[in-house]
Image (cartoon, rainbow over all chains, first blue to last red; front, top):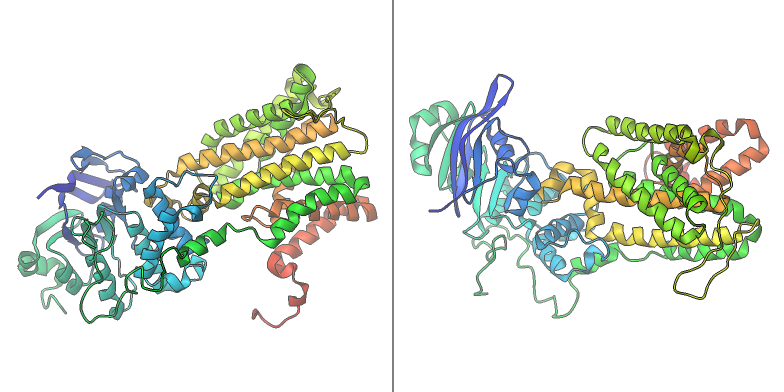
Length: 251
Length: 362
């Protein structure tokens, strides 16, 4: 197993609070890795550190063995580390089509062109076609994003990340606010990603976590509490105690 | 489909009985060679609208049909160009500015000084002024990269004030409070052609033709720019900087680039003013210039490039109409107009038949 993304003794303090406390995590190539923990355990902070939105207080982040701890956020994306947000972060005045086309043009290296229109690039349009169809956004592709229904915006949130061609995909509660029936569909799409893409998932729905993930890391108070394969972690009585509730894991 | 997939492309659709995700991308409906729907749509975003063509056609027509109004039209065209520059910064990139006159004034003084001290050729002077203002944009862009809108308002205001005072104090160079007088422009000679010897005359027709050509050129270039991937990325970082960075865009570099370009455009507008009036005074750096161009853009609308032109026309015509009627109180009526415009909303304001329709329904 090759490690793609790793942290070594990562610490992030906000004043006296250690939101991330000495976290060393390995994300293997092709991982289906879930990050769980109670509210306030520091899951989103960890993703913010991995993507460069926040700077760590100490510790290092390694991508393919290179130290990327102080690499700018957009440069990490260009090296394949892409995320989605728990709360939609979209371009409200653009359309889904132009949002996706822009993201595609970034990884195709044409986003600095300033003379030829965005729509002149056939490769961009072809990739947008695939993404729009996949995420059922084709019928709303020309509407401004701010006018879309929540469900569509949620799909666009995830489609935008996939438009960046991730090698490492960090999903921060991708199905938050999505109706029960549609959650499975989103996960099927994520499952359909190529096996070599490494995925780190934050999710509260334990059924989804245990269906999707092969490895689970439990964070409590910013620190790694437990780590292992799904079967081990889901049976670990200590994990049940702190996170799942002592009565019933699947309640 | 036996080829190895690149990372990030999709595997085959998931099997099973669950609802499908819209199926494969290229169904049998997409005949080979036929444009895909998104391709058509994407190209449509940059397509010329009829009113854009009409506007470009109206530029030379205004020169032909309104010869007696050339001086007024020249003023309008210069303000319009200035406002296009602000629209790129404010409307597209979302950077607020209360000191855009810094670039306008810098272009004006550069052009006037160049004509007076180096050579009187207008086109060479214009190019020099554009380059100088672009450089000013590049240097001052560092100041607007970080901080909130409020800091940007203060910083841009500050830069314009500093330049104003510099122009005031360096009177051996700029003429100080008296302005830079005795600027004599040579005739316009278009390089690499036999077109030469167009003197700036008292009717202002040569000046207006010159301004129109520069306005049309910058409008065309700006139009290419805003429909390009670079232009779309500006709107993206205006809407959401966090996400713009999260799809791999270098937010700061792009802001530097657009601020530099906008500096060049505003500098061109200032240079046109100095060259066509043969004069540069402290007025070009004054706060009211920055405020006026903001008003013009608010009147015409931001974020679609033509707001500056419509706004400049409405603003100057209002000014002339009201000032002719009641010279002392024109600011009162302008203020009232702005309040009504903002309250009613531009969309409704330009559609008077909707003013008295019921409720918010349309």
